Image 1 (cartoon, rainbow, N blue to C red):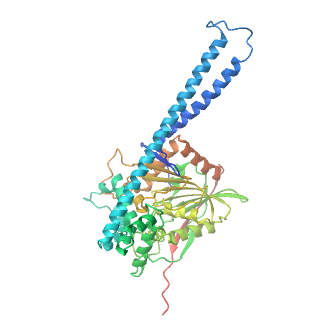
Image 2: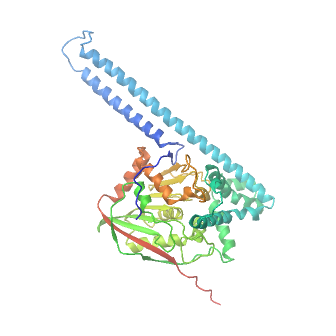
Image 3: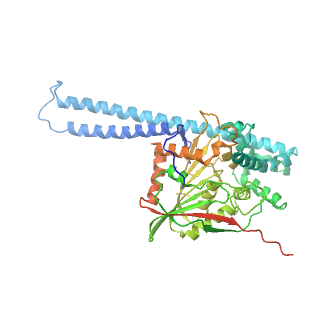
Amino acid sequence: MSERPDAVPEGELTISVGGTTLVATDAVLAQAEMLRNAQVQAGDWQSRVESIRQLDLGGVWTWTPEDPSLTLTWAGVALGQLEERTGDLAASLTDAAERYGWTERAVMHMAVLGSAGLGYDLGRFRALVFLLAAGPAARGALAWRAWNSHHGSPGIDYRFLTSPAAVVLTKLIVTSLDDVAAGALGVPLPIDLLLGDSGLGLVGVSTTAVAVLAAARSRGLFREGPVKVATAGAATSATPPTGVGDLAARIPKAIAGQPQVLIENYGTPENLSWAVYVGGTIDWNAVATTEPWDLTANVTAMAGQNAGSLQAVMQAMHAAGITAGDPVVIAGHSQGGLVATQVAASGAFAVRAVVTFGAPESRVSVPSGVATMTVEHTDDVTTGLGGASMVQSEDRITVRREAFFSAEPPAGEALPAHHLDTYRETALLIDASPEKNLTDFRDTVTGVLGSEPGDAVLWRGIRLPERPTPR
């Protein structure tokens, strides 16, 4: 397991509560909650003061400073004013957050609509082949990034990739690829807009990924296959995670030849609970190998199909002894986050909480009642590969932070904001925040996993060689 850093990093968290237009920093939401608590307490004390004043104090008012009835009356008036003022301030902060969220979503919706129209026009002008290649090209760029991140590329400036503008642009390009196809195929524009991301959302990123798979697999690319899993060592002792920082710290790093999944169990044999941690992409080659956490699994998962990494996690969970009724908390980074949400969406396990870091998973529909936290860096372009989702689950909390707002990205690294270590820093900020949505999520995790020690086992998945086609 990875060690957590001792110091809490600096930074500002922005929280979006699913199903509403509430968007604000954690500090603003915490202050609004503090004011609401003060309002309740002021009202409670006002009621107590009035009850005391109504007691028979043995005579009429003397209207002197020493008269307790007069003092209590003044105290009641002051508490009433405090209750009103704190309520007004809390309402103003919440209203400001609602207005900001509404504006943000309206702007994004207009941008999606505009990019859809542009994509449709480009498709009509026969630019289909060029723009359909943008999806695989973006993933190819990430493969190039992965190589350079591990081996270094002196003299190359990647800073343009580590910016909120690059993330928004990526979301719009990915989201509009289906509109390019619709334009090239001659689908009427109103129908395209109705079915696409700006309308019902029946077609979109998944549809594009399916088309990419269909074209690429005939050429030997992105070909999935069966997987098998095995433990990667004996069980070790573990203590339950106490927050989001612990969850992030236990996600396996994406290292070739190393385990990709960690599974912990807590409780008693009659009442087990589980924590599952899923790592990110390891192999960025478009030709499938024995590594299920690869580019093939990325595209397959985006298409909503049975990716090798998803198969491996499901197999490991079954092999570990997780039953359909056992409560589960699952966390993942990058591709592991996408897989984590797909495990929850499958309904095969009783997932109670999901947290993802830097994953293009916002379109995965997690079942109602599953506490979901999506952690994104606004300067991590990988999160943009999921496109611009206009629909949020009621149970989803999205926490955003610009990782390199006040610092220059490291030279020679393509996507430092996507690193698991950088997300672990953000997880510490989440744990340090008093904001109620965040504390409620932490309470859900600790409520599921308890406080008693348990066991931890690492698992490694391997994709089996493709069987030759019978002649």
